[in-house]
Amino acid sequence: AVQVTVLPSPRCLFDDPVQIHVVGLLPQQAVTLRASLVDESGELFQAHAHYRAGSSGELDLSCSPALGGSYSGVEPMGLLWSLQSKSPYKRLAKRNVLTPFCVDFEVYEGHGDMSRLLGKCTNERWFLREGVKRISVREGRLKATLFLPP
Image (cartoon, rainbow, N blue to C red; front, side, top):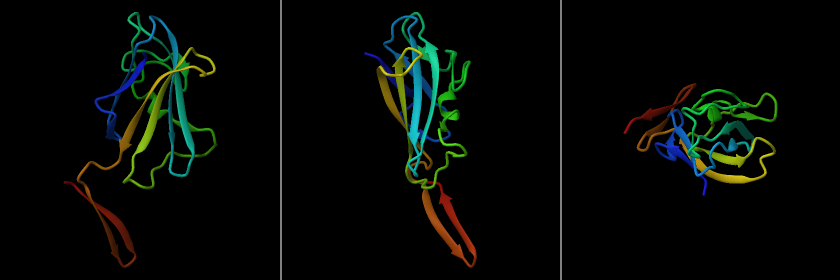
């Protein structure tokens, strides 16, 4: 069975670098990886890249070059930095930092229509480390939020 993993953990902070690995592919198999997330307004953001598995049927985005798609070349975080909406002028922005962005990583057979899903996983990308205190500050015309470390 094909497995997609996000290391070091499927739960991390938004700016933490991650390593994306796929195992269980056929040697030299052509696949497409797709990242998707839905923001708080319901807008879908996606990125995809075409890859060819190594001789052992594994794919490691930190050393495997993308052959095309949203980007090309060796880009370990390419599926994240290249996320785009189909709607023009939409930006990926977080309004509620108390909830994560959930990014789905899917691997499809071939470089074509993405109709045969081989495997997937979800990565929760949080904005606040556990234990951070959030304090609203209101003083006259000043409105702010103070974040205190644990």
